[in-house]
Image (cartoon, rainbow, N blue to C red):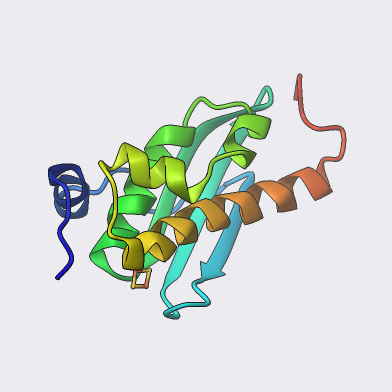
Amino acid sequence: MAVYSDIVIEHFQNPRNVGVIPDADASARMESPVCGDLMEVYLKIADGRIQDAKFRTFGCGAAIASSSMATEMIKGMALAEALALTDERVADALGGLPEQKMHCSNLAASAIHKALQGYLEAHPEGQPGK
Ligand code: FES
């Protein structure tokens, strides 16, 4: 049986950054290839940094906790730093995830990467000084 850390349980019960940013500079929807769960992420970006992040996750408790933690982690990050966010770092920040739930933290990291890649394709100058 899966055992969750207190941090996972706390973020699942009180997720941060739930919602939509209507005028987001970047957004993405990602479906887990493992289970079909969905995450939508919305980002506000200025001066090459993530100013705000929100999400809606239609998925398991570990995915909701991972989405909450990942959006907390990337707020204030430079774009390159956020692109380097890995599922392992999200899971570590949550105090670990059972091996069979690592794909849940990967959903959050992948959705963030997809939003940032779309943003950088639309803004190839890389955004410092936007
Ligand atoms: Fe689907 Fe966790 S079981 S993201």
